Length: 592
Ligand code: OXD
Ligand code: MN
Image (cartoon, rainbow, N blue to C red; front, side, top):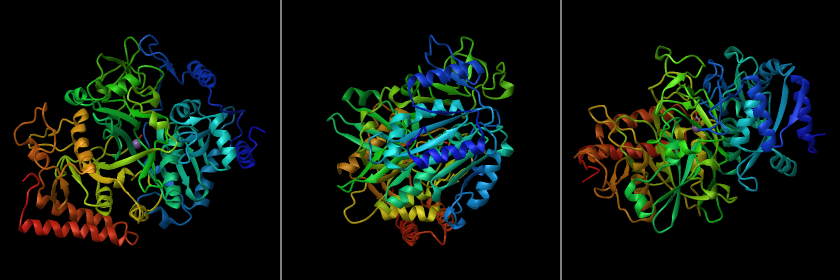
């Protein structure tokens, strides 16, 4: 017996009987195990060694070209009742789903090794953490899980103590898009994924467990599992405020989580601490505040666009002991993507680089790296009790209308802001790029149940004794008439975060508008920024007619979750619509 927990041992035996592997390997999570997997993958070509002088411990993996992103149309949430999955999920009846995918798993590991990976999402000794076991036939998945989670013997010991774990079964199968499913069974706390070896489809601790299954668990247990970064902002007085922020995929969460303060701020002693870049689990503490942990131990970041000017901390993090997936390679065998100096000679598919074949690195190419390698990594990421959250931020890529920043007038309004948020689509999922898609709380691909019930769950946190964070909405992506971004973004975003902290402390007054509180003129520190006259007014302008159309569109969107749309949210939308109407007849401007 490899585990003294019967439920675990039985499940592993059952999976082995179905998939019929040649060997079974229980992962202990040791460095020796990792190194031996790397050697094996170098030998069979799963990994390619990169330049060990410039990038010690770095390897490249090229995925199958038909397997380069999450596949939302093949991702199912199989609640017993279809209604519970909601219009935001694809659904199949659990019995049908099991039958369909088990037929694929039948004998799929013949001649292969089956790896059993016990893992813990969150600090190993935190009461907020939850455990799982992934069974996979992919050594690439094992190596990534070693970086992305607390994986191995300590996790197994916790599972055996708690007798609770999420079951995740994965096989790369034939990597045939026609034989690919990512299925979730929230009632059974289990996941089955077949036919993809890529990121969120295959590293089951990440999107499948820490978001889709955990969002269900969180609802049952009174907490939140969110698609959010967690960043600590330390002011010159040494106070640190933690901010959790939700942006749709590939909108700069990793950049914000590792932000470098602008020069003047650095001189004044501002510091930024990275707790997480993608997922945040938050739970009310005994004092009523929300406390957050990052369930992950690493970053699975989008490589293109990560450069010395956009995110030097990420670049430093990936200078050693990193797995790259689908990046290009230079003549001297260094990893390469758009934004880096040098020239690609080999593209992500291993072909001599030819611009006619498209970008050298795949737009969704990734790095997998331990969070501890980040120069701004926060030791608080290991704190069992988590970090107290001062502000929650929502945002998206909105070329027009949405101001640089606005604050919700209360929790209900904040939930409306989160529910209404949207973004132009990016390369992180398959499908059209550049189309506006509403993506409530950035959870559209990840919320494991009906969005109407999810909004109600968010609203339910607002109860007697709760000391909830303030909620803000930001838009770093507003464009001027010339089509250029109005706000410089990146490190300069700290100016906006500072205003939020001032609002949390009660030292900035802001200006009330029908859509929320915006910074008053002079409340945002802009010294050292080369903004044109009028540019900040444009960034903070509230176009009443545009907002009237937006609030109508938000109403239509929210009604798509009827009859489960909470009445409180419907009324809140009406309140904002009425405020816009009133303002149209006696206008105010945000910067007045
Ligand atoms: C991710 C995503 O990979 O959100 O983090 O797509
Ligand atoms: Mn993400």
